[in-house]
Image (tube, rainbow, N blue to C red; front, side):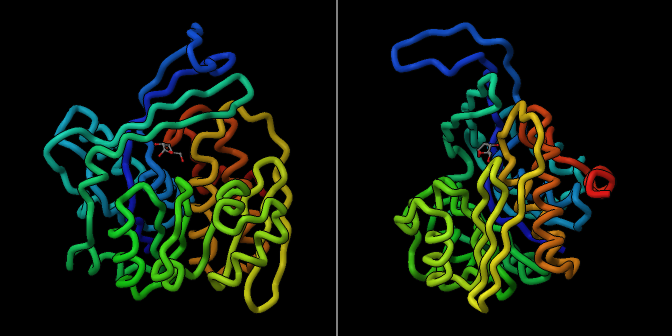
Length: 291
Ligand code: RIB
């Protein structure tokens, strides 16, 4: 079982030829509300990729909360530890352009009320084979979960921010994209950033979009996995899909390179469809594409 302690957001997505500049108004092509949030996305990606998954987090008592709960449940994610709190759910305001690129503003809402982990949350996390964390919950809660987990911790350091030393000390694998890797290490070159990350944590994967992914471990292993060439229509949650699938492949004990290729294929399939939770492939689809 994989546990995810993280955010759930309702994504309010505007599709447009080109994102507006400051002060500019543009006419968009379409609008959708799609369940997202880096935590919920990783939970759904891992469940679709074949794992039992438990999600720990919060939604508001507004109209979005039940929709996000149903989205997790319909992917087979256990939501016993999803609490409902008074007020608004987390919301993400997303603009997707014709090249599939996006920009996102997250308003935490209920996610911001998750300031720690309860004993019941920890019981779920400690029964799991790995804990997935991101940075859309308050940092003190993320740190507490990582330090108390007693299972391997996989951190997606997004949105990029300063990482406390106690958090890094509790992380087993960090999975930033190239921008987050540069923000953490100060190195724009992914190879140099990887070396610097390995001074902080035992294993790291830097996702490089169309350039694939770079893996390294303190034991000296280095791997570069190419991206699967596809036409992206929406890259939202591609990184979350990669991490969810990677966690599943690692939990299954697959060799490192095979696990990375599995994750890269899941991400490549996801960018060919619109939305976050709506774009993640199932296990059969990933296996078939890899064959
Ligand atoms: O990583 C993609 C996610 O970031 C979106 O679903 C949005 O909710 C934001 O959390």
